[in-house]
Length: 457
Image 1 (cartoon, one colour):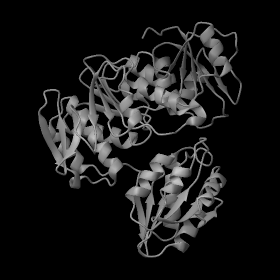
Image 2 (cartoon, helix red, strand yellow):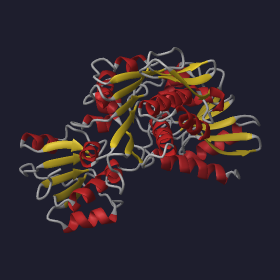
Image 3 (cartoon, helix red, strand yellow):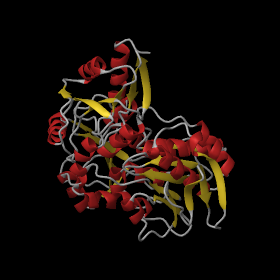
Image 4 (cartoon, one colour):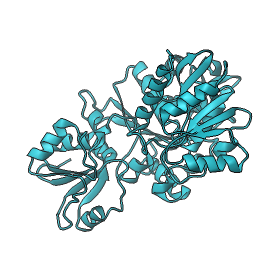
């Protein structure tokens, strides 16, 4: 990128914004930073660069001047595109992109990009482990918590390296040239409707992952998810499917209890047994199939893929064991930030379950969430902004074994008081964490701290 001397505004100064500010400042841009919060947690190096540069550091609602002529705006994930000063800057000739797009332009490595409503972090992490085991220089970055810009500028991230990148719908909205060699779409279920407005708009944002792919690239999609599989329409890349239920012409599937991959030549390769996976649940089988298909498409041998799948034990805050007290198990699924993810967690957990749920309001229905309780969930502890909505949905369906709680500690203590040996106390909120916590990781750590406070290990 030719950025030297250009006027750049970074919008949103959390991890990705700070990384973008440092990278562009080092390249000689005149960088300013804006965050609507009176943000005190900004990276000190980025804050010093912004405060001491020819640009400015704008915090706490002091919006950039409308008559400012910016050359480039870099938006952090979650920043709404319709903010007046952003629209005005674009009208005055500024280019508006996101941090993912910036990382793509700065990087020389190949991208393997993973999106979907659920399973992104697990699949991204697993795919990264496969590539590393295959001996490839690999950075695992993006929506997973490590800014893609930072990964793109690591030493050794040259043309032979891979950027295994978790990407969200918010990040894909602000892409223009982003061009992954391998793109994965895991599933599409209602989420972030407070931002996208409709399921159709949300699905369209997800489908942007293959917008710039061509015949030399690969698009991997879930054949068992109608919306994800429909997204292949208009795709110029080679399409590979993955499925638990049928066999694609190209892709990953289950045959005789074994994960199997079929390539473009029609030949199949045995990967490993389904029973050898360490991660529980049908949804994690789908994640393993997706990663296997993508790695095979990228040229990784079946033996390496199988070895990585057998060794992988999952990620923190996704069906993570959090201790056992008096025969009562505690499971941290704080990453269950939407209804579909929480349903999958319930399906993957043995009954009886005492469920902790509630959080930030994304304007979705909780009916399907309550329907998943039948025969498995014996009590429900609710907290956060959506507690009342979930309570109303549960009672409308005849489920009344619930309590409204003031926070995590009360939820955990009441759940444990109700539990009997053999039960599982499951935190799977079906909601984002932003009403009470800065991120789902903080919520999950609070849950584990509360469990330890009961005397658990």
